[in-house]
Image (cartoon, rainbow, N blue to C red; front, side, top):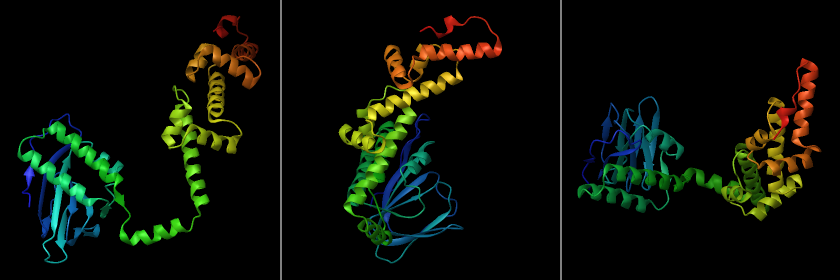
Length: 305
């Protein structure tokens, strides 16, 4: 067993840091005041349950992870006297909760990890590196962050859920599963374009972000809109520019182009192709309408590039 080991006082600039690490023979634990930081428990062998007063009881089996939040009263009770092995890692820092939550590790209950022994080995490596003074606080912060990410990627469905998930998956044909995946990818692609139309966003980078090739993504856009992904993004930018000009009638063509991330001369050509007139003429027309309404003076200088 690896004795309980505390790290040094963390640097105040660290948003995530290692507080403690160790392993122990499975035994009853009772912490009426909780623990000062987040605890990641890894049960290598045996079986037991965590009791949280007022919240519930959760069973943990070998090969599973259980995360306990700081300051939460809890008790751990082994199911037998098989002397299983329980490892733990204490994690502190202002960002600890947000990182663990984003990684999906804060769902109350146990989490089954694939390749569990690799995580156990990494836990023991962390302990030994502290023992010989090889891991500085900043380095251990990086190690812990990577460990959390890897755990997130390794979460498996628990046994009672497995049958249901397999049955649900098996009820779909290959064509239906591919269609479902394509719908998710297309929806995400459109969402990325809507969010980043002002940025220098290329279609190939959108395709990479949704896990498709440019050719495949273009096929999806053709199926749904009859145009390529690039044409869709271009039309989106032009539409956004037109909407922006409605709200800023005294803006210049250059300002409108820059607002949607397009080079001004290219913007003018594409705008005329899309709407039938140049943005300069449209700006002039809108200002003339405003003049008639407000009886203001000459405005020719307002629509210059």
